Length: 124
Image 1 (cartoon, helix red, strand yellow):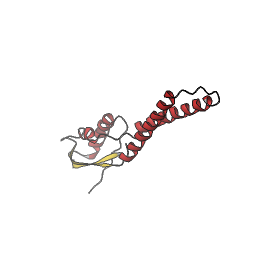
Image 2 (cartoon, one colour):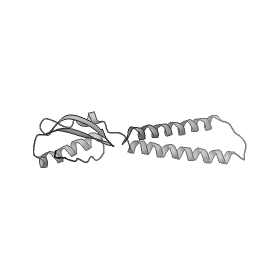
Image 3 (cartoon, helix red, strand yellow):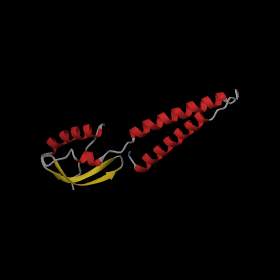
Image 4 (cartoon, rainbow, N blue to C red):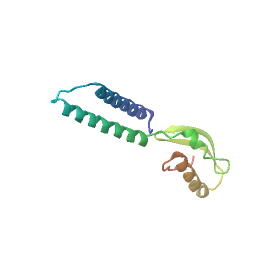
């Protein structure tokens, strides 16, 4: 996820929705007046759970160790990795011209991450 606290919050809300759905399934209420409300509540909780699952997938944290394996001695040698937002900062040494390395790394990183990855360079 972009932020571990966001990931934790989404998981908590998803568990809460699942727990409420299980409670509704266990309760047996045959009152004809409350039945439509229970159905409405159940549909609402099911939609909320579905939205949370989509959000969880969207904000899923990148596995920086998996991404670190995309770098190599011939492109960019990584010496340090730091989590930053929904991505990471890879500190290291460029081994070839930037024009040659950037497209190759973007392709490798996007495949490893399972989504588009944007590379930024900083000249320090």
